[in-house]
Image (cartoon, rainbow, N blue to C red):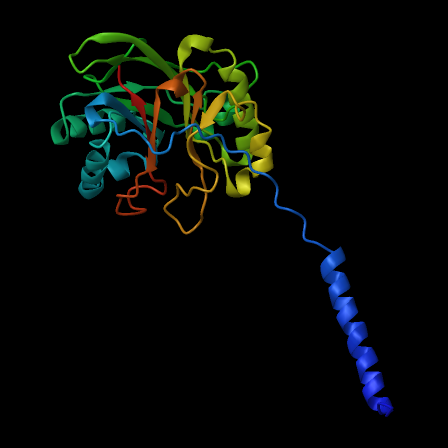
Amino acid sequence: MSQQPMPFIVASIILNILLFGHLGYTVFIEEPPDPEVVYIDRSVEPLEEVAREDSIRIATFNIKIFGKTKMGKEDVVAELVTIFDRYDMVSVQEIKDIDQQVPYQFLGELRNGSSMEWDMQLSERSGQQEDDIGGQEQYAIYYRNTVVMPTENGSLYNDSALDEFQREPFITEFTAITNEGESTDFKFTIITIHTSPSTALDELSALGNLSATIPLESNLIMLGDFNADCDYAALHELDALSIRNENHTWIVPDDADTTVSSTRCAYDRIVLDEDVSMSYTGWWGIDREMSGGNVSDHYPVWFELRRP
């Protein structure tokens, strides 16, 4: 039997060593698995069609620096009126007018450009603790008084004891009205919040503590600019929150993008407690029918409740 030349044998040995080393690296050194992301979704597929008049469509909208300058731009205000016209309720964050006139001026624009049905629940200026004054804003909930009515004036959460929020959440209760204009027993409580980015997780944890003090039958809805993503909150940190469990429905998924910029961040969230989630139709969305950052750096995010 003929023998292989020595250079061929040496090359073959080297090739086998390299091949074994490559296979060994592939087999024994594996990439760590991606962390499991828990997203609670109780929507039913396929979704039942719900007539528009049989639902309460509620949006949350951070209108970036909503003050006198923006209110003075006719094209922006007209576009905001068009956006609001698609909803029955809109919870607004980042109203910045020290004279507190802009919310009323915009209400007038809504009544002129959309419908006389519009009314407003307006908070005091948040950031009431001395160290929070620099971040003061107001919340407003604009609503159609033929669809819902407030049962109270609403108030900022009293944060004086622990000072857990830069901008205290706004808490108010509404009752649904039938198509025939009759008040119903279906009441729900809305907590609106705009967290400080640097302390978003701490504030969301405090929001969980606050929600635990709300009576169970209140049909609690927590919404607003949570800053609950990207540099401000990792998924495993969100999963550790008390409001991130089987008793709550997080409508906006973690991989959503609620921002106008090139970043992909699910900052704006809507969280339902177990009771009110029974009235959730499963329909929700991110309203991208907006011209761009001249209106806001956030898109409105909305969902629907079944109207009694």
